[in-house]
Length: 311
Image (cartoon, rainbow, N blue to C red):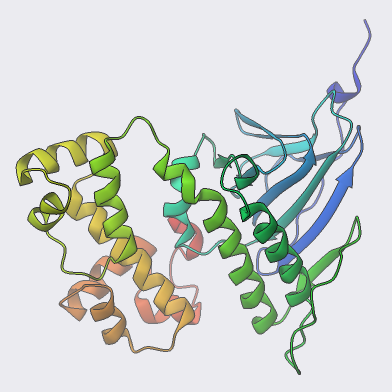
């Protein structure tokens, strides 16, 4: 019986350490495959610019074409490569530890087994694809910054080019570019859901846009022209959680981001995120992230860490 090339076993491939940010640009030909029987310790982000790739994680599979973002979460066996029958697969890729705030943006794109797939702006909003390409090039340059002088200017990347952000400044700049990419690709995914009432999507957007605002069930219901009882029922039925639970989750994500990106005292982070009581904020933050806000900011291994948001 003949055996096809894609059915042959391949050796296990290592993945970059999770504490680094590794970014690269590949244009691979048929036969290219990567196999990680134990998954990876870091997250893998791929954005396809040409050809087609196939990514399988657990029992979930995604086929990526130009403009598609496919993300593989850590800890689940995966393999990926050029889609059988495709002439090549050109794609940007990033291995890193994802920022907790990205969970909400990727959630509408979730498949199963830690796989997220979004049709990119090359198939939708004009102009965003070029901006994403620019962000990847900037990320490649920023990953090489030593911290002395200005970061390198983005240049035309070569096939197979890889950069590793070792320093804190380089790593954070690179993650900022990746955050822009995730936002640009996933921004339309939530708006284009057809299984959710437009008024509920609007209320969810109001919460996400300003989680620190004094939202209530009544104020959100009035904003979308529904009675409070009807609004609460629809919101819970369609999104699987109550409006106030969604608001608390959004406030915790916002607080986590402020802790990551600013030096604001914990009390001010709590207030800016909509928590009236610092004591209550500390308690619910620890419940969500496995460690108190101060330990979360310093990276103390006193709990679940960032991965807990995604698992």
